Image 1 (cartoon, rainbow, N blue to C red):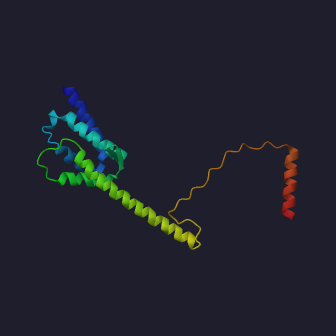
Image 2 (image 1 turned 180 degrees about the horizontal axis):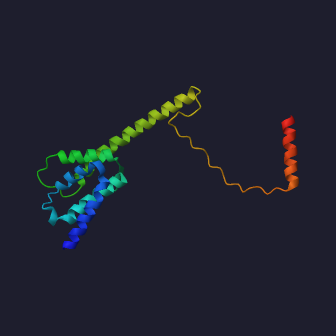
Image 3 (image 1 turned 30 degrees about the vertical axis):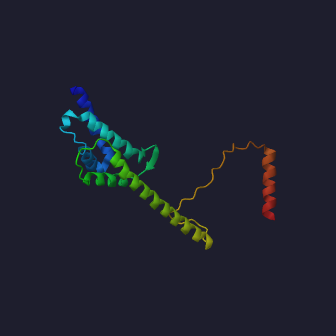
Amino acid sequence: MELKQDSDLYAIIKMLPVFGKYSNLAWAYVELFGIAPMSKHTAKIRAILEVLKMVFQAEGFTFNRKRYSISHAGIAEALNVVVLKNFQDRLENHNYLKKVMIGISEKEERESGKQAERDLRKKEGGLMSGTRYPEAEEVVQLPQMKEVPPARLTEGQIEENRRRLKDMIKQ
């Protein structure tokens, strides 16, 4: 039993860096589940933190068979909303957090869509005005060149190519 608790505590300590500057929010969220004393409930704490870890690492989650994307800042905002809410009872599952994250995820999606639309309009305006060069922050993707094996030319072919080049230069 003690060995299991030690392995759970070790796993909890190892996953704390995943949350980075939001680790305090993660611990405050764990406390909403009414887990006390910690020494007797290390497996449940580990399970809760592993769910949060998966959300943080994937920057997304699934709810009702639908996938949502959310940034680290969005997850922290959702955790903050949940932690600051005064619950009468302890939490039983992550559904409330996920519902808060859905709203934030949809807001982030709308904002990124609006930003993409603004960027596209700016780019179109530049093209319409005759500006054909990319802006400083824009990255231009060049097409991939296919690999061509080196040519194996004979001496006669090399001399013929030199003669053609000289003729082109003279013209």
